[in-house]
Length: 420
Image (cartoon, rainbow, N blue to C red; front, side):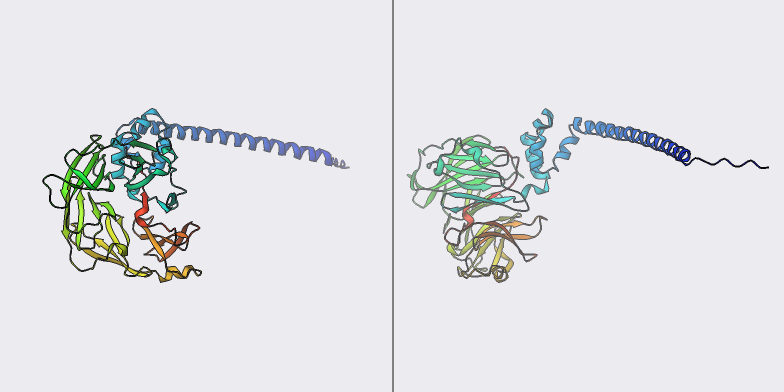
């Protein structure tokens, strides 16, 4: 007779299965721990290799600058804190000069400072920058409302400070500045018209050094024709000198721009006036009568953009169609570069009835190719891309035509490491 089979206790089966599952879990955990350990070993090896590679780069005095030349200015300012070696390298004037030549973003306009009221300095950033540097670092030397921006040039700015011949040159990016010594009175020539121009000339692609020009009418013992006394400050010598120059025919020195190694002035008498900064010669070139250059009050913009000298004029103040002229490199003539129709732009602002706008500056797009007009219109600052026909509001001014800024009270900001 067969023995009856022994009945299994369900609780025993559950205990057996549970113990097996615990063993499997322990094995899985062990495998995971081993995997984690192996991963940690792999990661530590990778990190060790990266650290070694980084040390090689950092210790290589030839390779490190080549890499940092490609880094934009803002990160470089933070990189100064990495080590004494990096600080010494980044703050070196030769590095700053090479960075300007090698970094493609060094010539892009990051934003503009402008006066929207007689004493109110405002600013707006371009290309997605959050804000422009504050100028509070100048507070210890600025003389309140008597201190005013008079010029900017390729990353540097110049302030008149308290009238007379007191000037400050600063770099808003590095927050460095210098108070210029006074040029002193001329012992040879007598000023007859007072100073009417203070100009900053600086090209970081050519030199580490900048010049400041103060121009006034003068008369000398042997001078019978209209001529000028020009005080020139050189940051290379940290001193002033004076020269005199006969005035070219015509002569309007209100609208000016530094371009192609010279300071250029707007003139409507078919005479283009410029002062060559290197040769220190003031000269006038007779221009062709076509295209016709209008009177100074018809000028909407006269300035540099992307290596070109541009001029915008309108026959009527409320004209919404205009040409953008470009100067040939040899300063022999103007050519028509763009024809602009502002009517589509005005249609965006339905509440605007008075056709009043100001061209604050011309800038290249973030890609460095498109041409962008920065305009003050309907109480706002906008960016109008001529190529894409797009409009972007950059800033609300809370004012209309009575306090809209104008281009010759607009000062470009370019990020720069240049010393002062």
